[in-house]
Length: 540
Ligand SMILES: C[S@@+](CC[C@H](N)C(=O)[O-])C[C@H]1O[C@@H](n2cnc3c(N)ncnc32)[C@H](O)[C@@H]1O
Image (cartoon, rainbow, N blue to C red; front, side, top):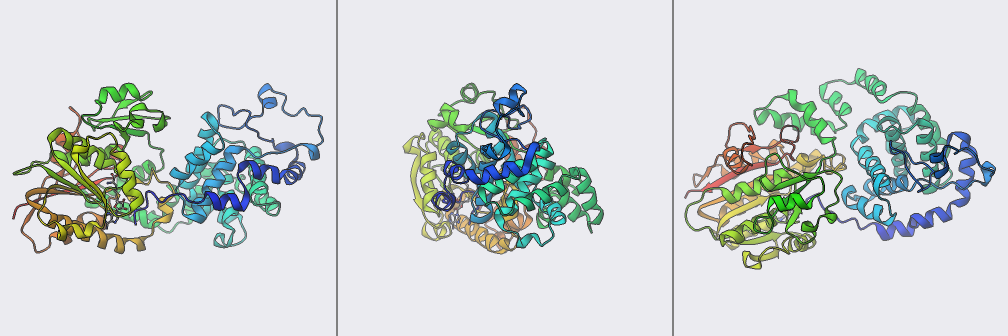
């Protein structure tokens, strides 16, 4: 199953268990008072009054410079945990225990807590930063907790990771990081673990991140473990990415840059759907937008919410990684013999590439059939197509792509198989996925990928073209799937995918891809997700 859009259906459960943010605060008012008493002077009760330039939460009194002056005894002061930390905790706890997706859950909770600007930025960094660095933080926490981390209550572990990130990954002063995290534990878990959180975080704060890292690296048995600690990736992913670089004709020396790129927050990239919007119009519509380096229809920006972009709201533009734009453009531009009328998007949900293809199809008089296995994702495809001329859309259907080859043999001129995959090429966008994916997921995925590609090879007519695409560079999901599908066949030829991509890039840009026929984009080299593209033309 694809990992990129499981719906975050946790809200009612969450509400039942501990109430919404407001209810939680009311219910725990007494506990909060005791917390502030015990924590004493070093802590400051955060409110939603303000945050300083470093992202630290500041009450109005502190912003005025007279924070410590109050007539109330400590036991009478009402502590309330910083709402940004509560949001980060709630998201991470749902990711940990309920398989929620941070990129779906976070915006909902930010909205619900009415966090904007710096507070929203702080909550976002807390959430994504903690998730990305989880492997390193767990290795450090394992040295500070006197029992196996696997036996620690998941909510408590989330609290400890959040504290570790504030101490080691953000510029939050240690006293604030510790006291706020203790207060968070009290509010969300109860009074019990406060002392433990306090004691563990004080141990964590005794060393800087680099000191911890040096200590851990000194005991690491090999380079893979070292890189996995330093860049906080599971060891199997480090190995897989190293293998993928080498298979692509690159060198293992690039691996640290690739892993580092996974830990950077990517800018938002928008696509101007051809015929609906020009790139210049999109540029004018996206605050502080810049044209993308390679895609001729892309605009990128940081700190912009897609819902604030008018052309996104009306469907003429969408949010789409530049690599995804390029592979769809390459399929649409690949030379074919004969008619060019019927296109198939076999694994369409949520429909980013379908919308780009359909917009191009509308300009060319072609029609797209969009197929998706999961009904709720088929609905997302429909929404993505809302602005495209309906004449260019044959149908949007829910079905198993593996059956299309048998149902409609030799019927399509162009086919996109954007196969479900491990998503190892998009780790920077889905910070939890590196911890969730397992090497044991591969056999089932590669079998499905092979079946989908076989179906596409049956569904394309002679002279037509199939694009096999993954947002993973893993050798087993890319070249090996294609090799297996073509074994013993002479009715297909591999087209030069690097050349096909180079033909569609913006004027003057050079992708500098290796030799074909396969093409692999890389976050550290191209600033895109690690999209893989193989183009197969039916010749017999
Ligand atoms: C990588 S995503 C496609 C992304 C999409 N092309 C886009 O650009 O928005 C793969 C999709 O394949 C779907 N899928 C999984 N198994 C399938 C099957 N047997 N037939 C058709 N679609 C399938 C998944 O539900 C998922 O939506």
